Image (cartoon, rainbow, N blue to C red; front, top):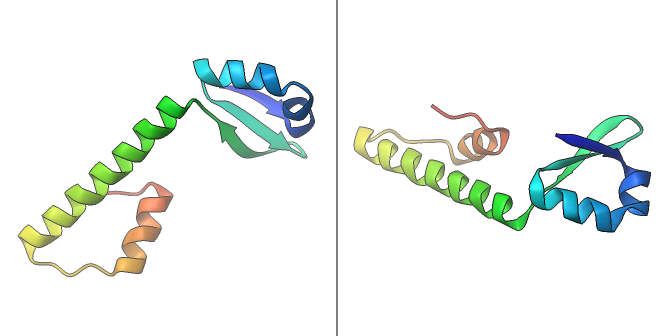
Length: 83
């Protein structure tokens, strides 16, 4: 993944948009990663995956008749953890 400083992203925004269409681009501020710019197609794909995971976990919980702590579930989902 390519990486740019926040200043480079600002001064080269048009180029950043073009690069993000090909692959995600990491944006760093003070040397630390703070954001990723990606194509809308990649973003939509990730959102579909998250929804699919949520639906799968809800279905499994129903089948197992286990209760799930909603707050903990969404924290795990956001953190990218899954069973």
